Image (cartoon, rainbow, N blue to C red; front, side):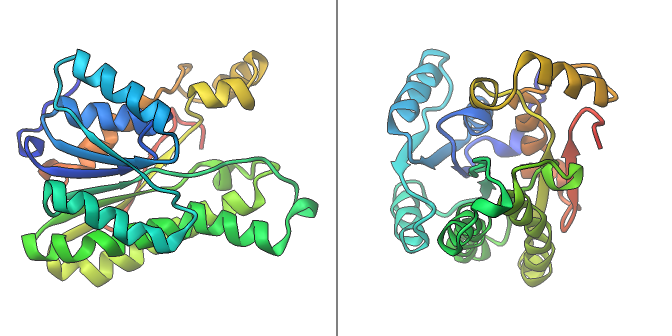
Length: 253
């Protein structure tokens, strides 16, 4: 049974990459709490499907807007449009990422820049875009997503792992810069989450068995597990938590 956080009811939440996978679980979880949720993604079809599912469950209805986060200049106008509909944001969940596999030899300057933009740069510019509203409200929670991939030294993820390692530095820097504004900034580090995309593209049944052998807890990690930690970090139950990293990986690290 999911915990209920009364302070999340009617708060304004922005989730990036919210149309599917972990992001969809996070959007649903905040809607279940009664929050006013906006989410951005490049997959409009999946976004429409998610909204329909949430409405069918009688949770608070989220709003969606298309945004290609790799185009950094587009971020501020999209977030301003959502802010004009909901008001200033109390919570930002920087979930969006792209873990396309690649070898070091395949990396070109353009690919390197694109990977850092989509996995690191957009997290900063989303945070920058919500900062003034959080400052005006006198509070806020920003949750940046990293990954166990760089800690595990997984292959074929050089640019992705580099970006995800840098997220921790970004978190600690912004937590220091904005702490006097009562804005908390933390990193959430998911383990090997069995989303539909991972199971279809990267993780075979044999791979999953090996993953669970490495985990202390012999379980399948789902988006719901990541969403539960996200709710905690967004809530006042985590009022004294900032500049920290919280790992949800069933003990694989």
